[in-house]
Image (cartoon, rainbow, N blue to C red):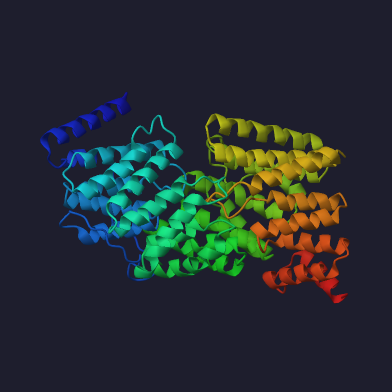
Length: 556
């Protein structure tokens, strides 16, 4: 009842503003419940977020507006909303201030906005539409409005496609507006189909951004969106220059400090990925403390997942384990969202799976249990997948099949929720788990094609930005199975394919070396083992595989 009354009141306010064509009152603005407060800067003494200029008719807040744009381009959405709320306080008739509020609640390359964020964004757009604005500004408002309109009945991807079409129109109408082209590139990335291996939209976005970069080398959005555009195995090398530039452009942004690691991990540059996420975590801790946040910020948890992944690929178990223990002592997090839940499920799973600790895998629990995991079926499936593999690899098919039932239930739930991407991810995990159950039951004839199917499905599926990589790549897991089936040449081919999309992974390199030895290819085995030693800084890693590798190389 209360929600209905609020919605009715907001609708009435929109109509009133339209009829009288006057700025909203303080009460009307207050009904949006905007984030306000001092801007928080962590890192350099002076706020450094790059350079971006957005022309607007709001006369008294030009510098503030440019700051809001810079924050938007680095996905510092809460801080951006503070800036746009301040603009509205200073100049209530600034229609683009409300546009900024709507953009701050959109976060197109992360998870879809919550219902509360959608309500706020829709309300802000309603107020923006009620105010005088230039023709160009009305197009900006209409573009993000296309995303929020009818959000109750239209899905996220449908609305993201509407935003893309509207930004394409805007960029075409105002060819001199560089920000329009930059936001159009963002819209293309947001609307890209993860299954499209032609990367049509991403390459369009790259063309727009690369053309703008020479004239604006310090623009945070251009460099940031180039990293997202190239965040695919097939394209990652193209994004390396942007990755090595972005943190220096916007060192006051925790996300800008983290984002380069997307490319570093794609290329197996583990040291750079680790440094990137250590800096991100430090900034995230600073931000949480400075804002008196109740709990750990989700950006810190996101950085931790990438950091632990990097440590594990370098064989630095002590460092990875210390972060896992740190994670287990966290009792509160803000906000409790997809990103946080993913980190809590994935980090402990990665540790036991990468180290092949199958007994521990079979008994795994998420690192944080103060979450309603029913809200996060994709993340809950990570734990079930890990347990299923743990039971299978310790030859307990009964308990493994119980976990498989849970995987299938979670996949069905995701299908019902119309989360196609996550449902597909869980389907891959279920097939891989079932393949290993069949294998330990001696049914190689059905286990092998099912595991191959899981690997093929994963190869056709793009990685979600929330994760540095699958908790255990299916193609690599297929290589493990083939090696245990005493098919070393087929296993070697599987590992080599896995390394093309996941270069520098510890277990894929070690598995490739083992398969090469058993195939009689000693030179190839030596090459893989030497690469593994180079990556792991062998003197620091206590992994037993490193001892075996050194022993083998001494025999050559």
